[in-house]
Image 1 (cartoon, rainbow, N blue to C red):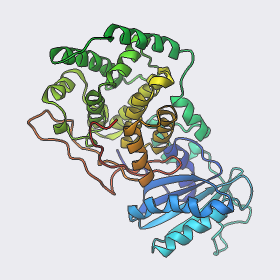
Image 2 (cartoon, rainbow, N blue to C red; image 1 turned 60 degrees about the vertical axis):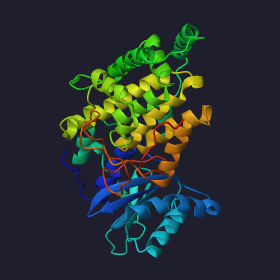
Image 3 (cartoon, one colour; image 1 turned 180 degrees about the horizontal axis):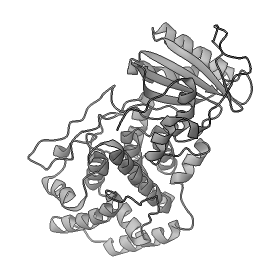
Length: 395
């Protein structure tokens, strides 16, 4: 995909909601720049004066780990001056760490201001914000099927339980549990059950070539229940994450039979096929389908599905969606260890290096994991950045 080119501050402000996934308000956004290209993007709520130091402590370390050439700060406020205390503190911390702040902007009531401008070129009444359709870079986001939501609170609804769907899935899960009650499975029976679960996952992941797809996707209650029940198998859950997020989990940690089953049942991740806009759209389509699944899952069983969704969102660089998925998972399952691990990675601002190759078959090498400070820039939630290596088998 060609880099999205921004001509100046007005373009940056126009595309930020598309990068974040929603229109920010009462927030400070920090943008790490590398050779005039946008890297890590962070957002944090504006803080009262007595909490500014804590907010600054949360925001600045991930930026420093990025080793940016410079940082751009954008405050979103409803009252004049609300964004400046936090913006001042973050600027001072960055300058003290020898990271230059390229500029500071403030957005309020449809206008933007440059409080540090001392050249007389920025009017005291500010500049009117451009209409997004007039900014060429926005068209590139539209081509990727990205549209910002009204606010961050709208993100939570993308993964919230839908009471019109969850009862039927709960009943299907109870039926699956009743059929399995008192029986133990091993060997061939386990393999057969895994193939059945993976066949349902194939329906979720098969988005390649779906050129007319516009988010209208829904599985039946029995199929959603199969997905949820399958993720109770920890190795199968880890295998699904390894498949959809190549480079996150080492394939050589999985059994040979399970890796063969992945290759037999699942389509190659669409977001690795050919690169460019087609690959980017494929990733977003799978995220949309996983959101539809998550909305159908009762809270009592939501942790595993939301953690798979959060891993893919983080791998693709959507930190805001990662946060809301983890919020729901941990609200109802605070001890779910894989969600806790990913939450810690988001807090630290580290992300897996995306693999450039499809998941390998056993015997042909494994996809490398590890940490990186470069790679695709993730739009973020409250505070986010890149993530690191996940160990298989954690629950």
